[in-house]
Length: 298
Image (cartoon, rainbow, N blue to C red):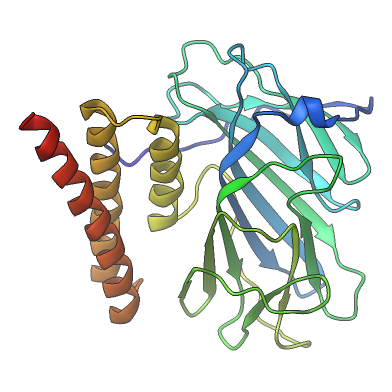
C-alpha cells in the first residue's frame, strides 16, 4: 500500500444557516473509524484546531446526516472532504450550524474509490479561561453517540511546555500510546470510552508559539499512515477473513512499519518509542501472515 498524499483544494466553505436535530434513529449504524485532532496554542489565548475524521455508515447511497461538535465560539476556516486515497479533488462540505453542533450530509463524490470519505475541518477558538484550554465533546447523549475506533490527539507546543489531557473535572486521561518530540506530543486511544476531554499546557505563561500550519489533509509522518491504515483495516474487516482482506491488512501493517523505521532514522522517534511501536505492528503483521499461510495450505 502506498502512503497516500492528501491535499486540500481552495474551494470555499458553503454554509447553510438552517438548524437540524439528529434523533437516535438517525444515528443507527454510524461510527468513526478514526478521529484525529491537532492543536496549536497561540500566545494570545487562541487555539487553532484541525480535525480529520473517517466515518462509517450503513447507508449505501452515502446520504446519512452526520453531526460534529466544535466549540461554540469556533471560527471555521475550512471544512472539506475527499475520498480516502485522494483520487479526486477535495470538496467543500455543505453544513448547517446550531450552537456547538455542525450538521452535514455525506456527499457522493463521483469517480471516488469505494473507500469511506475523509473529512477535514480547521477552525480557531478563543479561550476565555485563565489557563488557555481546548474543550471537546466526542459524544453527547440523545444528540450523537458515534463509537470511535481510534482517537489521536496531537498537541504542538513550546519546548518547555507539557500538555495535559484531562476529563472535564480535571482527572488525567491516560493514552494507550504516546509519542513526544521537542515541540509536539501525540496521544492515541483505541476505542476510547470517555465522552469529552480538555487539553491545557502545564505552564500558564509561555512565550514560544508553534508555527505549524494545520491542514487537516496534510498530517505529518507516521500518523498519516496510521489513520489511513487503521481505516482500511476496519473497513475491510468483515465477519470472515478471506485472502484479499488479509492481504490488505498485511500491506497496511507493512506500510506502518516502513514509516516507523523511516521516522526513527530521521530521529523523530526515541529508541524506546521505536522499539515499542515496531514490536506491536510487527506482531500484527506476523499474525496476519500466519493466517495467510494457513489459508494458502487449505
